Image (cartoon, rainbow, N blue to C red; front, side, top):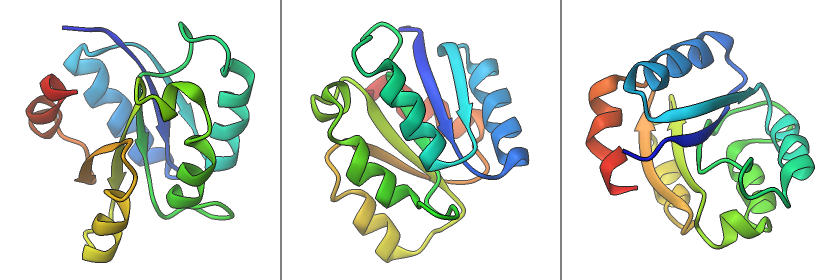
Length: 131
């Protein structure tokens, strides 16, 4: 199984703790980086944009966050070569099961999965092999 660099983007610290725990338990990640806002995540990606080794392979992204939501983040992030080339994929991890959000998420080619929080090992193991 490929060890990935994972980026968690969520403003909820409890959700980040749970997601980090599940990803760690699954052993799919060699590194997990957490950012508490979409803006902080973009700032982080900007610092590593040319470092394909350091750039995440997998992003777990919340939709509902203050100032910049997950969709606004995607509109900016798709300009990064590794995301544009889909060597980095996005999993929406959100509390929203709204059909409009689901439909909107999959309009982005880089979005490969849409999961409702909390992340569980079973949910993770179902889709990780296909990424």
